[in-house]
Length: 297
Image 1 (spheres, rainbow, N blue to C red):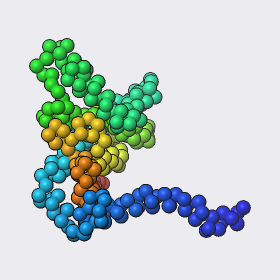
Image 2: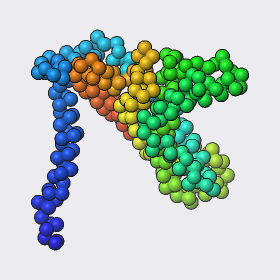
Image 3: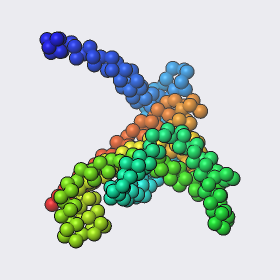
Image 4: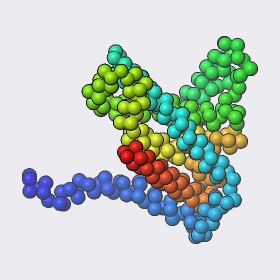
């Protein structure tokens, strides 16, 4: 038995099935996406190589692509400057609870286990629906009927509605990550600060936040990558409307490739999404390392 386990062929035998599946459903699609991005291809006829024409068109002659890019940027900014502070606040509050802590953690995490389609439909009809949605119903009940509107049908509020829905779904997942980091802090450190007279706010600001900074950076990084590949929540709630105001790069890629049969151009957009995501991630990593070095000094 031991001789068998020490045989390299045994490891290859166990790894090979997973490696084949990984190559077929991950490596090969990435390779073909990169390849077709340089072609004029409609999905049926033979691809025609056209060089960088698709990329030039997207970057210089296609305003719809830049609308999608800007909406992805709004996803990123909302995640960093609105969602992350809320995540930290909820995590600190839950960490300070003595009773029913498990109940609160489960309640906060619950939306994360729902599919995005379910969350999108739930908010579309239960929260933002102009006639039966609880948002308009609540505004009417407190005498603010003039504030009611079709939240997903108005260009001014549709994108914000999607951002709020997306944040509601994923906040709980990130809260659990932050809670794990907070519970990993030595109790002696927090108790010493309390004995020295530090308030809860001071302990959070000067002890907890600095000690969990690596986890905060991970959350921001995950938020950035998630924002750059946003697709399903937009399709379910608005399908890019009204008038393309909620279009993101991924939904525009889907529309170009599968609705208009410009598969070559769609693959080029997919490659640009990958490139932009990589660049933004590298920039953030550079900033986070520099910030960490300054703090370390």
